[in-house]
Length: 456
Image 1 (tube, rainbow, N blue to C red):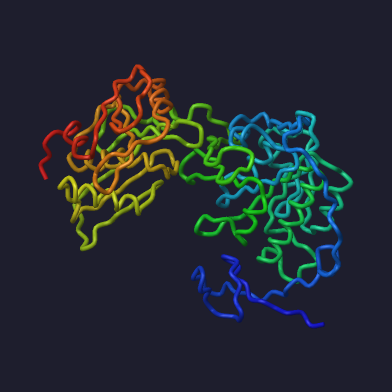
Image 2 (cartoon, one colour; image 1 turned 90 degrees about the vertical axis):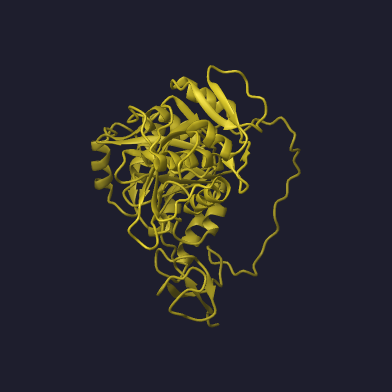
Protein backbone atom coordinates (compact mmCIF):
# COMPACT_ATOMS: atom_id res chain seq x y z
CA UNK A 1 0.00 0.00 0.00
CA UNK A 2 1.53 3.30 -1.12
CA UNK A 3 2.16 5.93 1.49
CA UNK A 4 0.33 9.21 1.14
CA UNK A 5 2.32 12.42 1.43
CA UNK A 6 1.73 15.92 2.59
CA UNK A 7 3.70 19.13 2.33
CA UNK A 8 4.62 20.82 5.59
CA UNK A 9 6.26 24.19 6.29
CA UNK A 10 9.36 23.68 8.44
CA UNK A 11 9.02 27.21 9.86
CA UNK A 12 5.45 27.18 11.15
CA UNK A 13 4.21 23.60 10.70
CA UNK A 14 1.36 24.50 8.34
CA UNK A 15 0.22 21.65 6.05
CA UNK A 16 -0.32 22.18 2.30
CA UNK A 17 -1.85 19.98 -0.39
CA UNK A 18 0.97 20.68 -2.85
CA UNK A 19 4.44 22.17 -2.89
CA UNK A 20 4.85 25.92 -3.18
CA UNK A 21 7.83 28.20 -3.05
CA UNK A 22 6.32 30.37 -0.31
CA UNK A 23 4.25 29.37 2.71
CA UNK A 24 0.89 31.18 2.69
CA UNK A 25 0.63 30.96 6.50
CA UNK A 26 3.94 32.45 7.68
CA UNK A 27 5.35 33.91 4.46
CA UNK A 28 8.65 31.98 4.57
CA UNK A 29 10.32 31.09 1.27
CA UNK A 30 11.62 27.58 0.41
CA UNK A 31 10.42 26.16 3.72
CA UNK A 32 7.87 23.62 2.43
CA UNK A 33 9.04 20.01 2.31
CA UNK A 34 7.35 16.74 1.46
CA UNK A 35 6.69 14.34 4.32
CA UNK A 36 5.06 10.92 4.45
CA UNK A 37 1.91 10.58 6.49
CA UNK A 38 2.31 8.09 9.36
CA UNK A 39 0.48 4.85 8.64
CA UNK A 40 1.64 3.06 11.78
CA UNK A 41 2.07 3.92 15.42
CA UNK A 42 5.44 4.52 17.06
CA UNK A 43 5.92 0.87 17.93
CA UNK A 44 4.79 -0.57 14.63
CA UNK A 45 1.13 -1.22 15.45
CA UNK A 46 -1.35 -0.25 12.77
CA UNK A 47 -3.75 2.51 13.66
CA UNK A 48 -6.65 0.08 13.52
CA UNK A 49 -5.19 -2.25 16.16
CA UNK A 50 -6.75 -0.73 19.27
CA UNK A 51 -7.09 -1.99 22.80
CA UNK A 52 -9.39 -1.04 25.62
CA UNK A 53 -8.35 1.45 28.27
CA UNK A 54 -7.84 0.49 31.87
CA UNK A 55 -10.36 2.71 33.63
CA UNK A 56 -10.07 3.34 37.34
CA UNK A 57 -12.67 5.12 39.43
CA UNK A 58 -11.05 7.57 41.81
CA UNK A 59 -12.22 10.24 44.19
CA UNK A 60 -10.74 13.61 43.29
CA UNK A 61 -11.20 14.72 46.89
CA UNK A 62 -9.42 11.71 48.37
CA UNK A 63 -6.66 12.40 50.87
CA UNK A 64 -4.00 10.43 49.07
CA UNK A 65 -0.42 11.56 49.40
CA UNK A 66 0.11 14.48 46.99
CA UNK A 67 2.99 14.70 44.56
CA UNK A 68 6.00 16.25 46.26
CA UNK A 69 8.02 18.79 44.32
CA UNK A 70 11.78 18.42 44.19
CA UNK A 71 13.90 21.54 44.56
CA UNK A 72 16.94 22.13 42.35
CA UNK A 73 18.53 24.35 44.95
CA UNK A 74 18.67 27.22 42.43
CA UNK A 75 16.09 29.58 43.89
CA UNK A 76 15.40 31.51 40.68
CA UNK A 77 14.78 28.31 38.70
CA UNK A 78 12.59 26.84 41.45
CA UNK A 79 10.59 30.09 41.53
CA UNK A 80 9.91 30.00 37.78
CA UNK A 81 8.79 26.35 37.98
CA UNK A 82 6.26 27.29 40.65
CA UNK A 83 8.14 25.92 43.65
CA UNK A 84 10.28 23.12 42.26
CA UNK A 85 10.15 20.22 39.82
CA UNK A 86 6.94 18.20 39.66
CA UNK A 87 7.50 14.44 39.17
CA UNK A 88 6.66 13.05 35.71
CA UNK A 89 6.51 16.54 34.21
CA UNK A 90 7.71 17.66 30.77
CA UNK A 91 9.42 21.04 30.42
CA UNK A 92 10.38 22.82 27.20
CA UNK A 93 13.16 25.44 27.34
CA UNK A 94 13.76 27.76 24.39
CA UNK A 95 16.13 30.62 23.70
CA UNK A 96 18.47 32.24 21.21
CA UNK A 97 21.73 30.48 20.29
CA UNK A 98 24.48 31.17 22.81
CA UNK A 99 22.15 32.72 25.37
CA UNK A 100 23.11 30.14 28.02
CA UNK A 101 20.48 27.37 27.86
CA UNK A 102 22.98 24.51 28.04
CA UNK A 103 24.95 26.26 30.78
CA UNK A 104 21.86 26.78 32.91
CA UNK A 105 20.64 23.20 32.48
CA UNK A 106 24.06 21.72 33.22
CA UNK A 107 24.20 23.76 36.43
CA UNK A 108 20.64 22.66 37.27
CA UNK A 109 21.51 19.00 36.57
CA UNK A 110 24.55 19.22 38.83
CA UNK A 111 22.58 20.86 41.65
CA UNK A 112 19.83 18.24 41.33
CA UNK A 113 22.31 15.35 41.31
CA UNK A 114 24.04 16.66 44.44
CA UNK A 115 20.74 16.26 46.27
CA UNK A 116 20.88 12.52 45.70
CA UNK A 117 18.74 12.48 42.54
CA UNK A 118 19.62 10.42 39.47
CA UNK A 119 20.16 12.73 36.48
CA UNK A 120 20.89 11.85 32.86
CA UNK A 121 22.05 14.55 30.43
CA UNK A 122 21.64 13.54 26.78
CA UNK A 123 23.21 15.78 24.15
CA UNK A 124 22.68 15.54 20.43
CA UNK A 125 24.91 18.51 19.67
CA UNK A 126 28.05 17.85 21.71
CA UNK A 127 30.23 14.89 22.62
CA UNK A 128 30.43 13.79 26.24
CA UNK A 129 34.02 15.08 26.42
CA UNK A 130 32.84 18.54 25.37
CA UNK A 131 30.19 18.57 28.08
CA UNK A 132 32.85 17.60 30.62
CA UNK A 133 34.99 20.51 29.39
CA UNK A 134 32.13 22.91 30.13
CA UNK A 135 31.60 21.26 33.51
CA UNK A 136 35.25 21.89 34.38
CA UNK A 137 34.88 25.57 33.52
CA UNK A 138 31.79 25.75 35.75
CA UNK A 139 33.42 23.77 38.59
CA UNK A 140 30.80 21.01 38.34
CA UNK A 141 33.03 17.98 37.86
CA UNK A 142 32.19 16.63 41.31
CA UNK A 143 28.48 16.32 40.48
CA UNK A 144 27.31 12.70 39.78
CA UNK A 145 25.57 13.53 36.49
CA UNK A 146 25.46 10.77 33.87
CA UNK A 147 26.25 11.94 30.33
CA UNK A 148 25.35 10.52 26.93
CA UNK A 149 25.78 11.73 23.36
CA UNK A 150 23.02 10.23 21.20
CA UNK A 151 20.36 11.28 18.70
CA UNK A 152 18.49 8.00 18.12
CA UNK A 153 15.21 8.14 20.03
CA UNK A 154 14.89 4.35 20.27
CA UNK A 155 18.30 4.04 21.95
CA UNK A 156 17.50 6.90 24.32
CA UNK A 157 14.20 5.38 25.42
CA UNK A 158 15.86 2.01 25.94
CA UNK A 159 18.48 3.64 28.15
CA UNK A 160 15.82 5.50 30.14
CA UNK A 161 13.93 2.25 30.64
CA UNK A 162 16.97 0.59 32.17
CA UNK A 163 18.46 3.56 34.04
CA UNK A 164 15.18 5.01 35.38
CA UNK A 165 16.60 8.47 36.22
CA UNK A 166 14.64 11.06 38.19
CA UNK A 167 15.42 13.70 35.57
CA UNK A 168 16.55 13.53 31.95
CA UNK A 169 17.67 16.55 29.92
CA UNK A 170 17.47 16.34 26.11
CA UNK A 171 19.68 18.93 24.38
CA UNK A 172 18.17 19.51 21.91
CA UNK A 173 14.93 18.10 20.56
CA UNK A 174 15.67 19.32 17.02
CA UNK A 175 18.67 16.98 16.81
CA UNK A 176 16.75 13.84 17.84
CA UNK A 177 15.28 11.48 15.27
CA UNK A 178 12.82 8.59 15.36
CA UNK A 179 13.48 5.77 12.90
CA UNK A 180 9.77 5.17 12.27
CA UNK A 181 9.33 8.67 10.80
CA UNK A 182 10.42 9.06 7.19
CA UNK A 183 11.89 12.56 7.31
CA UNK A 184 15.12 14.28 8.28
CA UNK A 185 15.98 15.26 11.87
CA UNK A 186 14.67 18.68 12.74
CA UNK A 187 11.67 18.42 10.41
CA UNK A 188 8.18 19.11 11.69
CA UNK A 189 7.22 15.42 11.70
CA UNK A 190 10.38 14.35 13.51
CA UNK A 191 10.14 17.04 16.19
CA UNK A 192 6.46 16.30 16.77
CA UNK A 193 7.00 12.54 16.99
CA UNK A 194 10.04 12.80 19.30
CA UNK A 195 8.30 15.25 21.62
CA UNK A 196 5.24 12.99 21.81
CA UNK A 197 7.29 9.88 22.58
CA UNK A 198 9.37 11.59 25.28
CA UNK A 199 6.44 13.27 27.05
CA UNK A 200 4.39 10.07 26.95
CA UNK A 201 7.31 8.07 28.34
CA UNK A 202 7.80 10.65 31.12
CA UNK A 203 4.17 10.40 32.21
CA UNK A 204 4.11 6.61 32.03
CA UNK A 205 7.38 5.97 33.88
CA UNK A 206 7.31 8.90 36.32
CA UNK A 207 10.47 10.51 34.90
CA UNK A 208 10.77 14.28 34.60
CA UNK A 209 12.12 15.43 31.23
CA UNK A 210 13.51 18.79 30.13
CA UNK A 211 13.61 19.42 26.38
CA UNK A 212 15.81 22.14 24.89
CA UNK A 213 14.31 23.77 21.80
CA UNK A 214 15.86 26.01 19.16
CA UNK A 215 14.08 29.24 18.24
CA UNK A 216 13.30 30.88 14.91
CA UNK A 217 14.33 34.40 13.91
CA UNK A 218 11.00 35.62 15.33
CA UNK A 219 11.88 34.25 18.76
CA UNK A 220 9.40 31.34 18.64
CA UNK A 221 10.43 27.75 19.37
CA UNK A 222 11.17 26.06 16.06
CA UNK A 223 8.88 23.27 14.93
CA UNK A 224 5.13 22.78 15.30
CA UNK A 225 3.36 24.76 18.01
CA UNK A 226 1.73 21.51 19.13
CA UNK A 227 4.91 20.79 21.12
CA UNK A 228 4.05 23.62 23.52
CA UNK A 229 0.65 22.00 24.06
CA UNK A 230 2.20 18.59 24.77
CA UNK A 231 4.50 19.71 27.57
CA UNK A 232 3.50 20.93 31.01
CA UNK A 233 5.77 23.96 31.17
CA UNK A 234 7.30 26.24 28.55
CA UNK A 235 10.24 28.43 29.57
CA UNK A 236 11.98 31.07 27.47
CA UNK A 237 15.54 32.14 28.23
CA UNK A 238 15.81 35.77 27.20
CA UNK A 239 18.53 38.39 27.15
CA UNK A 240 20.63 40.67 25.00
CA UNK A 241 24.13 39.65 23.97
CA UNK A 242 25.45 43.02 25.15
CA UNK A 243 23.96 42.68 28.65
CA UNK A 244 25.07 40.33 31.38
CA UNK A 245 21.53 39.73 32.60
CA UNK A 246 19.46 36.73 31.50
CA UNK A 247 15.73 36.35 32.13
CA UNK A 248 14.12 32.91 32.48
CA UNK A 249 10.41 33.43 31.83
CA UNK A 250 7.55 30.93 32.18
CA UNK A 251 5.02 31.45 29.39
CA UNK A 252 3.08 28.30 30.29
CA UNK A 253 3.00 26.36 33.54
CA UNK A 254 0.38 23.82 34.53
CA UNK A 255 1.77 23.67 38.05
CA UNK A 256 2.45 27.33 38.81
CA UNK A 257 1.93 30.93 37.71
CA UNK A 258 2.69 31.92 34.13
CA UNK A 259 4.82 34.99 33.36
CA UNK A 260 6.97 34.28 36.41
CA UNK A 261 10.59 35.29 35.87
CA UNK A 262 13.96 34.33 37.24
CA UNK A 263 16.93 36.65 36.80
CA UNK A 264 20.48 35.44 36.24
CA UNK A 265 23.79 37.15 35.60
CA UNK A 266 26.22 35.69 33.07
CA UNK A 267 29.74 35.49 34.46
CA UNK A 268 32.95 33.71 33.52
CA UNK A 269 32.05 30.94 35.96
CA UNK A 270 28.55 30.42 34.56
CA UNK A 271 25.16 31.81 35.49
CA UNK A 272 24.65 33.33 38.92
CA UNK A 273 21.17 33.98 40.25
CA UNK A 274 20.14 37.56 41.05
CA UNK A 275 18.07 37.72 44.22
CA UNK A 276 17.30 41.45 43.98
CA UNK A 277 16.93 42.29 40.27
CA UNK A 278 15.42 45.74 40.91
CA UNK A 279 18.63 46.98 42.53
CA UNK A 280 20.72 45.76 39.57
CA UNK A 281 18.40 47.16 36.90
CA UNK A 282 18.71 50.57 38.59
CA UNK A 283 22.40 50.31 39.49
CA UNK A 284 23.55 52.88 36.91
CA UNK A 285 20.94 55.48 37.82
CA UNK A 286 23.11 58.02 39.63
CA UNK A 287 21.29 61.34 39.22
CA UNK A 288 18.09 62.67 37.60
CA UNK A 289 18.18 62.75 33.81
CA UNK A 290 15.59 63.86 31.29
CA UNK A 291 13.87 60.97 29.55
CA UNK A 292 14.55 58.57 32.43
CA UNK A 293 11.62 57.24 34.51
CA UNK A 294 11.46 54.34 36.96
CA UNK A 295 8.54 51.98 36.41
CA UNK A 296 7.26 49.80 39.24
CA UNK A 297 6.12 46.63 37.49
CA UNK A 298 5.03 43.09 38.30
CA UNK A 299 6.55 40.06 36.59
CA UNK A 300 4.61 36.96 37.61
CA UNK A 301 4.48 37.22 41.39
CA UNK A 302 7.59 39.37 41.72
CA UNK A 303 7.62 43.19 41.82
CA UNK A 304 10.43 44.56 39.66
CA UNK A 305 11.60 48.14 39.25
CA UNK A 306 13.12 49.00 35.87
CA UNK A 307 14.29 52.18 34.22
CA UNK A 308 12.50 53.35 31.07
CA UNK A 309 14.65 55.57 28.87
CA UNK A 310 13.41 57.81 26.06
CA UNK A 311 15.14 60.08 23.59
CA UNK A 312 13.34 62.57 21.33
CA UNK A 313 15.24 64.47 18.62
CA UNK A 314 14.43 66.36 15.43
CA UNK A 315 14.42 64.04 12.44
CA UNK A 316 16.02 64.80 9.07
CA UNK A 317 13.86 62.07 7.51
CA UNK A 318 10.47 62.44 5.86
CA UNK A 319 9.24 59.56 8.02
CA UNK A 320 10.63 59.91 11.57
CA UNK A 321 12.10 56.86 13.29
CA UNK A 322 10.24 54.96 16.01
CA UNK A 323 12.74 52.57 17.60
CA UNK A 324 11.76 50.42 20.59
CA UNK A 325 13.82 47.94 22.62
CA UNK A 326 12.08 45.83 25.28
CA UNK A 327 8.54 47.10 24.72
CA UNK A 328 5.72 46.79 22.18
CA UNK A 329 6.17 49.17 19.25
CA UNK A 330 2.42 49.18 18.60
CA UNK A 331 1.74 50.34 22.14
CA UNK A 332 4.30 53.13 21.74
CA UNK A 333 2.41 54.36 18.67
CA UNK A 334 -0.79 54.36 20.74
CA UNK A 335 0.80 56.41 23.55
CA UNK A 336 2.13 58.94 21.02
CA UNK A 337 -1.32 59.25 19.47
CA UNK A 338 -2.99 59.76 22.86
CA UNK A 339 -0.45 62.45 23.80
CA UNK A 340 -1.16 64.33 20.60
CA UNK A 341 -4.94 63.90 20.49
CA UNK A 342 -5.77 64.30 24.20
CA UNK A 343 -2.91 66.47 25.50
CA UNK A 344 -1.90 68.49 22.45
CA UNK A 345 1.72 67.25 22.53
CA UNK A 346 2.94 66.48 19.03
CA UNK A 347 5.91 64.31 18.17
CA UNK A 348 5.62 64.90 14.42
CA UNK A 349 8.95 65.44 12.68
CA UNK A 350 10.83 63.91 15.60
CA UNK A 351 12.67 60.64 16.01
CA UNK A 352 11.56 58.70 19.08
CA UNK A 353 13.76 56.09 20.75
CA UNK A 354 12.53 54.01 23.69
CA UNK A 355 14.62 51.54 25.68
CA UNK A 356 14.00 49.33 28.72
CA UNK A 357 17.30 49.37 30.60
CA UNK A 358 18.95 46.10 31.58
CA UNK A 359 17.76 44.02 28.62
CA UNK A 360 14.44 43.04 30.21
CA UNK A 361 11.24 42.90 28.16
CA UNK A 362 8.01 44.40 29.50
CA UNK A 363 4.52 43.54 28.28
CA UNK A 364 2.48 44.90 31.19
CA UNK A 365 -0.02 47.70 30.27
CA UNK A 366 0.77 49.35 33.61
CA UNK A 367 3.95 50.72 31.96
CA UNK A 368 1.91 53.13 29.79
CA UNK A 369 2.11 56.05 32.18
CA UNK A 370 5.86 55.60 32.76
CA UNK A 371 6.47 55.54 28.99
CA UNK A 372 4.39 58.68 28.50
CA UNK A 373 6.31 60.40 31.31
CA UNK A 374 9.66 59.41 29.76
CA UNK A 375 8.61 60.73 26.35
CA UNK A 376 7.45 64.10 27.72
CA UNK A 377 10.51 64.37 29.93
CA UNK A 378 12.80 63.77 26.95
CA UNK A 379 11.00 66.24 24.72
CA UNK A 380 10.86 68.99 27.35
CA UNK A 381 14.33 68.20 28.74
CA UNK A 382 12.74 68.16 32.19
CA UNK A 383 13.76 65.37 34.57
CA UNK A 384 11.37 63.83 37.07
CA UNK A 385 12.55 63.57 40.70
CA UNK A 386 15.04 60.74 41.11
CA UNK A 387 13.15 59.35 44.11
CA UNK A 388 9.83 58.80 42.27
CA UNK A 389 8.28 55.79 40.55
CA UNK A 390 5.44 55.77 38.01
CA UNK A 391 2.83 53.17 37.03
CA UNK A 392 -0.61 53.19 35.43
CA UNK A 393 -2.44 52.12 32.27
CA UNK A 394 -3.43 54.82 29.77
CA UNK A 395 -6.72 54.46 27.89
CA UNK A 396 -7.45 55.95 24.46
CA UNK A 397 -9.43 58.72 26.13
CA UNK A 398 -6.38 59.75 28.13
CA UNK A 399 -7.82 58.46 31.40
CA UNK A 400 -5.68 56.37 33.73
CA UNK A 401 -7.03 52.91 34.42
CA UNK A 402 -6.40 51.03 37.70
CA UNK A 403 -3.78 48.28 37.77
CA UNK A 404 -3.29 45.21 39.90
CA UNK A 405 -1.27 44.79 43.11
CA UNK A 406 -0.26 48.42 43.75
CA UNK A 407 0.80 47.59 47.33
CA UNK A 408 3.48 45.16 46.13
CA UNK A 409 4.86 47.75 43.72
CA UNK A 410 5.02 50.43 46.42
CA UNK A 411 6.66 48.11 48.96
CA UNK A 412 9.40 47.23 46.45
CA UNK A 413 9.94 50.93 45.68
CA UNK A 414 10.09 51.80 49.37
CA UNK A 415 12.61 49.02 49.99
CA UNK A 416 14.92 50.57 47.37
CA UNK A 417 14.70 54.08 48.83
CA UNK A 418 12.02 55.75 46.67
CA UNK A 419 9.83 58.26 48.49
CA UNK A 420 7.09 59.24 46.00
CA UNK A 421 4.91 57.55 43.40
CA UNK A 422 2.46 58.59 40.67
CA UNK A 423 -0.49 56.22 40.27
CA UNK A 424 -4.08 56.20 38.89
CA UNK A 425 -6.71 57.66 41.22
CA UNK A 426 -9.32 55.00 40.33
CA UNK A 427 -7.45 52.24 42.18
CA UNK A 428 -8.79 50.66 45.33
CA UNK A 429 -7.63 52.02 48.65
CA UNK A 430 -3.89 51.46 48.98
CA UNK A 431 -2.53 50.33 52.30
CA UNK A 432 -0.49 53.03 53.99
CA UNK A 433 3.22 52.89 53.22
CA UNK A 434 6.19 55.18 53.65
CA UNK A 435 5.80 56.47 50.08
CA UNK A 436 3.89 59.63 49.21
CA UNK A 437 1.41 58.52 46.52
CA UNK A 438 0.20 61.19 44.05
CA UNK A 439 -3.08 59.98 42.54
CA UNK A 440 -4.01 61.38 39.12
CA UNK A 441 -7.16 60.84 37.10
CA UNK A 442 -5.95 61.31 33.53
CA UNK A 443 -2.86 61.97 31.47
CA UNK A 444 -3.41 65.73 31.25
CA UNK A 445 -3.60 66.02 35.04
CA UNK A 446 -0.39 64.00 35.39
CA UNK A 447 1.43 66.25 32.93
CA UNK A 448 0.32 69.40 34.72
CA UNK A 449 1.34 67.96 38.10
CA UNK A 450 4.82 66.84 36.98
CA UNK A 451 5.78 69.26 34.23
CA UNK A 452 3.51 72.28 34.67
CA UNK A 453 2.47 74.29 31.60
CA UNK A 454 4.20 72.85 28.55
CA UNK A 455 5.63 74.86 25.69
CA UNK A 456 4.82 72.87 22.54
